[in-house]
Image (tube, rainbow, N blue to C red; front, side, top):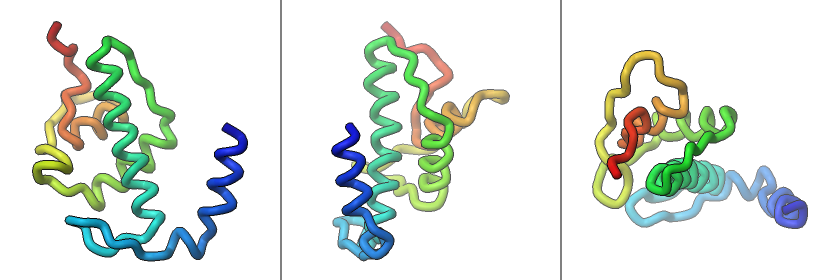
Length: 112
């Protein structure tokens, strides 16, 4: 993990993070946006897999905050991206609110 982290830090310089990259369906996006998009996607799909296998997936609050901020500003609601936003019950945590925003019913148990 330390080797991967060192390689990422060496590669993802400020200049590299600002460099635009063309993504099908999204157009020009800076590398920083792609990193955040992929992080948000990883959070959502980690929860999907954990939920489907009966695991309680708890994402670090800092990652939830970054992913939720990105999602609110950039989410694409169409097939192949994200489904419709759901409304969670009052009083749920930030992770559950973010997952509901991304179309996941994180407050309800998965049917067996």
